[in-house]
Length: 199
Image (cartoon, rainbow, N blue to C red):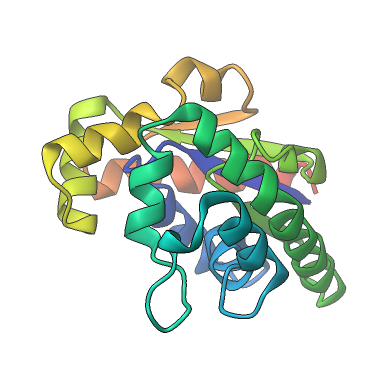
């Protein structure tokens, strides 16, 4: 089974992923990691980004200046869409390969951990989808703490994403991560039982 894992920034998707990753029959394909790899120096994807957004999105050493690019796209949905149109084909190709590798290695469940699962149409690579959601204030505090952002920067990042309903209406399973670690762990255990019952 390929399980798509998605959700808003700060909802706790990575925490859920870590809990699932501890299981021996599960492997994780990390879309964020693939997204970082496709924009490293010398890649076709980075060249396309520079052609589209100008050389100002590069650091002096030729690497991508993520903060600079973030300032451009997280405050303008049109620009974010343009960036996604450039990067998604490269990211999806990487996902396909890693899912194939995971299944060939004998894992019974491959988790595709992707924030932009629906936007990149990567949900089409999945048998089931799990969404992790949390209330806005909790997410804002987590993002500020995790990424060292100001309240305004955190809100800009949150506003560039969809609301709860977007995720819950499209997912087969939903985990709400507003509570403590024990509550979250119990939800993950319940989910695993359901998934294994379908294998």
